[in-house]
Figure 1 (cartoon, rainbow, N blue to C red):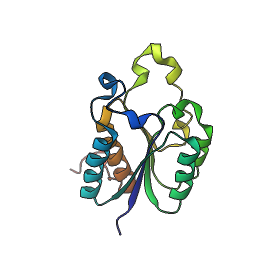
Figure 2: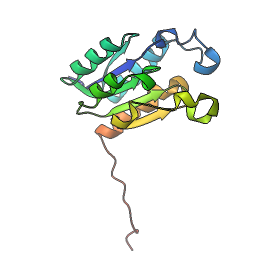
Figure 3: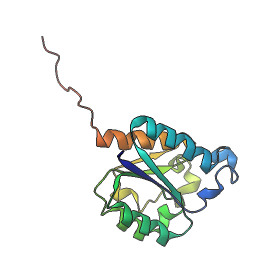
Length: 158
């Protein structure tokens, strides 16, 4: 059985490809799922890809993932700034957790209200600013967390 990675998408991400395509691109969430799933399978993983506008549903999925997930990728969307319960649920996972966002809001001082993340202190890593391709970066980050690469630091042998 392949290790399974849970990909969670928060509120309003069901409208990706329709809502603000200049910021999020024209790909739909179904397009993103298809490409991410194919990449995951090529890497030897199964993918469980979900979206909900309901905070409690996302929390329940995180609780369930404690039993089976090798890794979790979460794009909490607007729950990033508002959901301590999602952060609390993520904090009990014993697997790599990657927080993901389409845009890098830190580049825009006018979006300072979006700079806060209640999720970030409990995740393994954070990816932002790569649009839909960020899902592939997050998948690779989970893979590397599960299969660390040894880097030889120090002087070359003479």
